[in-house]
Image (cartoon, rainbow, N blue to C red; front, side, top):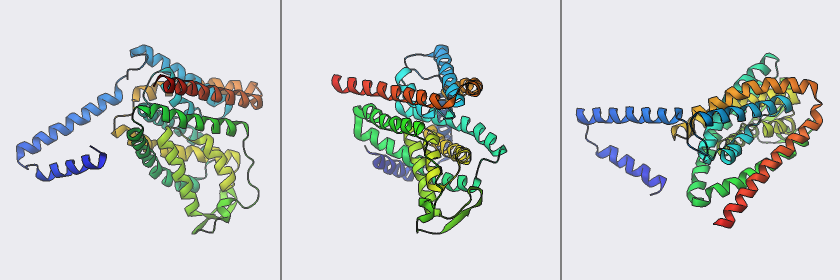
Length: 330
């Protein structure tokens, strides 16, 4: 039975259901039990290659590593969380994506507040792109559901292919950060109006529909991959909007916060978020960011970015090995 058929059956059942007091009480009890079951699912430790306290400890160590990379390289490691949760912990992709979005929401909130204090957040751009991304995140989740139905047993392999492509793009962007556009940007030249001014970025006549489409695309990627998307958003804000690097980083954190919150709600409603995973990652990353920041002050960051790109490529290669093995064994 497809999704549309299930909805029609549900609607028909509601129309035919009796409305007696006893039936209403039973419906209320079922709703309460459903809420309790969802809460238990959100707060339980999921089974993977590890379980119980050992898994929580391992997740904290992973969060520590992600935090060190964030503080050291200045790049959020959210795009590594999902593949590592599937590779090292044996979690299925939907649960890994939903839990990663919850983790990203927590990390981006603290980062945005810090940048806002330094006036490195352009709130007009943040809210415009976030409006598009809040719509895009559920669309990404819908795409994932459709892909899971179409791919069937090949769903994990299909997601591996998508993540390999994403990680290759990330590695290129980490090594070759694009320069800020000094001339009129693409969104300034776009003839589709209305147009707005962005005084903080010193840009005028920027296409509002173009910015909304950019936010929609960012949210769509967030919904599919469970990533904050900052490593992709920052270059786009620099090239398409014309923001400086510091303003682009702070603004992207605000967009990531709102889009990841939207994605967390969507995945949480289907029981595909583990608060245990997200909290363990957050606690570890909170410590790791401080360690990485100290290391960053003592080490030249230029070659470090290349090492980080190598780590991303190694993760992509690991996914490629798993993909090849699954194709051979199937």
